[in-house]
Length: 47
Image (cartoon, rainbow, N blue to C red; front, side, top):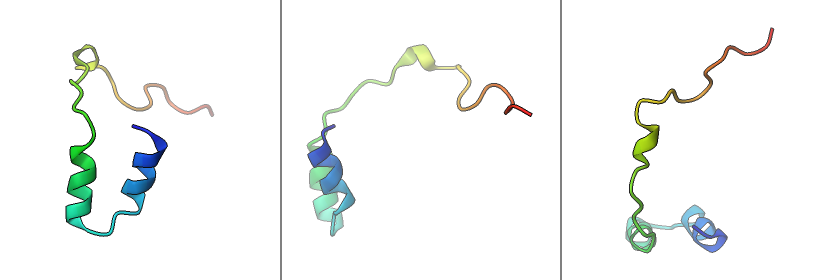
């Protein structure tokens, strides 16, 4: 997604405009290699 699309999404003024912008973003398959992998921090923060 380019910076123009991100900027437009940040300044959306209504649901119709949001739907139109989101419809213009191509679908991407979910990366199945990450299924079951831990998310976020996996180690405690340093003391």
